[in-house]
Amino acid sequence: MQDTLMQQGIDLMIYGMGTVLVFLTLLVIATLIMSRFVMRFFPDPVVAEPSRPAIQTGRTAEVDPAVRSAIEKAIALHRARH
Image 1 (cartoon, helix red, strand yellow):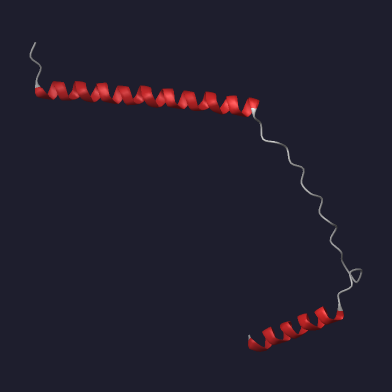
Image 2 (image 1 turned 180 degrees about the vertical axis):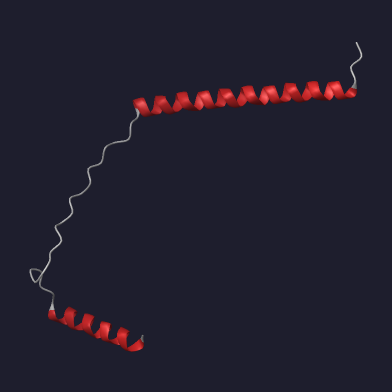
């Protein structure tokens, strides 16, 4: 049986595309199975978030006078430049 060159090319293309489709399908299935296996037997540990201190408002938190003075000078210098 003598096939034409075009028919042989189409047959080779269909065979190659079918092979790639089967390979990729198997790859996706294997990846899903491995993912479920890992998530079932090796779950991520639950980490409790550290408690955050309450934000202090008003004058309850005293600032060192030297630090306060340095902050005020820095703000004044910034405002003078801009």
